[in-house]
Image 1: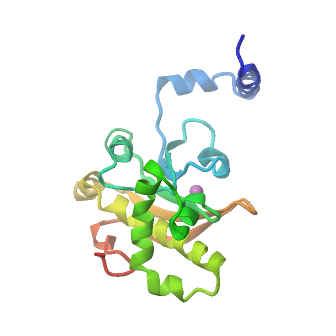
Image 2 (image 1 turned 90 degrees about the vertical axis):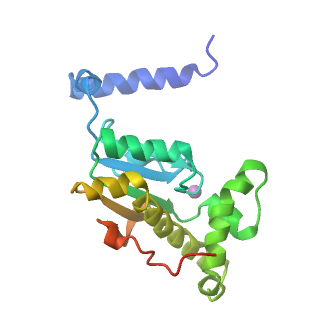
Length: 211
Ligand code: CO
């Protein structure tokens, strides 16, 4: 007996619902995927990529990890970007962070253990680089919100510096990297006004590099 039988039940109803409104939906999807968007977001269960932008299966290629980080030595994330850019030839890469991010909170508080601690070292380093701005915040909430936003911008810049993205631009392909942030409280996305469309845009807008 399946312990999670209710999930299979929900799945069956979901597939039936879709087939009722669009009988060829799954047959069409099975032939190919041609998404235009790569979504790099947080693993947080409250920030599901497709649902937030109200997109059906087939429209968004997704990579999620704690605190939506793009680390050049992360083989998983780099593989996703390579496949999205070189094979799927997606046109937009969206780095989407969110306010109220547990990963960012843990990095600010110096919490976390094991792999999580190592992973969040990337965020801590970013916080140290911007410590003057962060220290100037009125309270912990403001610090947190600011680091969430700075982190999105940083990760968008990291995307734009990957060899596959630079290669796509070199070959004249149209490809834009966006930085967005989501508010769990109201379900609304905000554009952080970062849109990188070529190597000339890849200088970090947040400050000088180097720790
Ligand atoms: Co998060």
